[in-house]
Length: 311
Image (cartoon, rainbow, N blue to C red; front, side, top):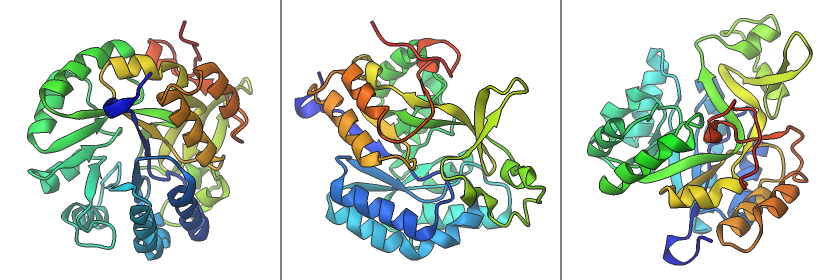
């Protein structure tokens, strides 16, 4: 049970998909009004071409969330490759646009660290933090919280938890959602429609939770989201929250999908507070509207798509 001053914190990661601007805005308005989450990440991490669609709503969304008592973090791109992306990164990291302001920033590409050096910031799950030396180096540069890559097993988290305590750094894990596995210069979504990346026609907006992929044997395998490769199955760490708390994990990230995220947050909060059994909560999670199977295999040192109940 995680209660009192050590109450685990729930975070809501940035929307990874290309939702219609009004849908994106209204999603965060509902989160502000109804979801029991402590921290909300905003911004575009996958494709800079999507950013103009959400920019007109950023100030209103941030204000609504802040008025509701949520802490706000602005996320940067996970892959920075050209001049426009470097400029966008510099604007967010430097607080010079409608997104940056005086808010904390999440670095999802090593390119962001130079602009954030000496300022308190968050390291996102796209930066590979696999050992204590990397953690200590990032902490010296101003990282105050690190969201660990979703492929890390529990055995690697234990020494990182001890190192984080020594460096006064908080640790976060990717606790719910399709896991981001890789990013590429090529846009898979565009290619699937026989389009080029430069003339993609924003076809990724047709798949609100990513485009499902199957193997040649017609088995569900992965999902694609623009330039991003994701898991087909949905990470669900509800059975593992108590153990992760013991290992030093204090923040648990829920990644937005088109299912009922308010209900998802409610179930995770109940388990974090010791008010609901993890099995019961997982049963409720299965009713939240997302059709893919659960997984937590990486955490247990197995194939990432596997699901294992903790005994």
